[in-house]
Length: 149
Image (tube, rainbow, N blue to C red; front, side):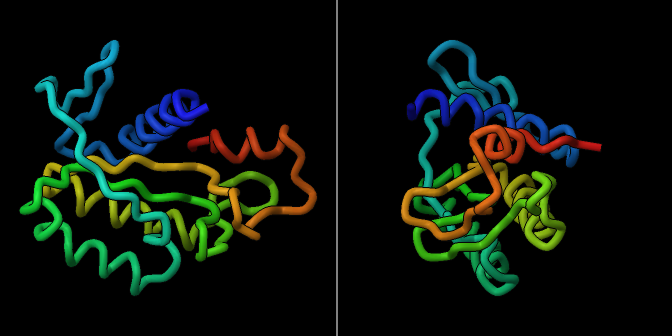
C-alpha cells in the first residue's frame, strides 16, 4: 500500500510541477530519487497540517531555511484530512478547494526557491473526519487525481 501511495504522490507532484514550472524537477528512476537529474537521498518531514490555515502555511514557509540547515530536503503536505486538521482540500465534486490549493501553491513555490521537494499527499483518512459522506471509492479516486485546467 505504501508503494502505491508513493507512486500517486509522485504523479500528483508531477501535475503540480507542470502547473508551477519551478526551478527544480524531482524524479524517480527505478529505486533512486533525483533533483534536477542529480541523485539525492530524500530526507523528509511530514507536514500534514500545513494547509490547515494561512498561519500554518506561513509558519512552515518561514522555517524552510532552518529545516534545510538540518538536512531536510523534502516536506510532505496533505490536501485533504490529517490526523488533527480535518480539513477538506477537495470540494465534494472532487475538484480542488481553491482556499487550500492557493496555500499549497504558496508552499510549493517557496520550497522550490530553496531547492526543496514537496510531496503532495492526496487523501489522509486514517482517523480524520474530513470525508465527504457521499464519496465512494470512485469519488475518492477522482479526488486523488484532480483534473488540471
